[in-house]
Image 1: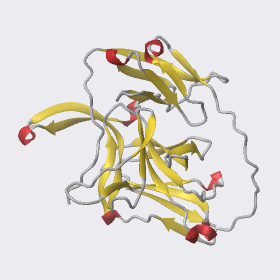
Image 2: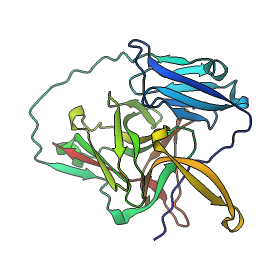
Image 3: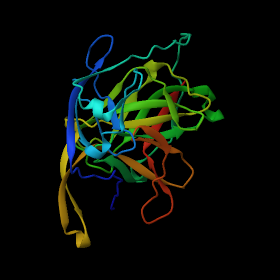
Length: 300
């Protein structure tokens, strides 16, 4: 069976400048890893590495635009690009949040329920990225009455079965739903960085310690790509008449599997160029749309 996968477009840089620096916590002065760095209204961006360092290639035509830095647990920061390239340190301010009252009770895991259960034969396509424009793909999970008795969020499963991924890292995100029906606030207050082994078909992420109850308005589960050297893979693209044109490039691990579903049955959103929007990836040569292969396990 032939599998297809979707990639963001690569863009060539003609005249450009390079911004190098490190992202730091404004209070502790410690480096912040995996910060999403995007030039708004453009296709340019990157992520900070494990040590908070970043390198961003900037086209001269983007110097008058704004760059947005965002990371879980910190206020978003926006800087004019022409000023950003002069900085070797960028400091983000931690979010100050009023914690909700939590009632701790004994929980017996007598029941579990799998939402959007996926078999390997259901996989038909996938999502990947080979542009340096950080993006997030999010799948909406609505609440239905059948979940009443098992409404604790126990674990999330990501499927990669029809792709031979090399090792990689990505970030799990859970988002509430905003007034515009798009992802809004983070439901988890700590970073969850997931490591993928070579050729691994599924990854299960235990989120039971977060003590999250399924929001009645539903929520989004998302995969965030990390544009770091660890995830880089050098590849050769083939295109043009009779696939004779070849060019070298870089893609970023992982490629997540997708299922082909009836158009409109599922809601998908993407974070791209610093903003959220609804997204529809139509299935290739047939009706329907590609849905990121994400499953959710609930418990009582």
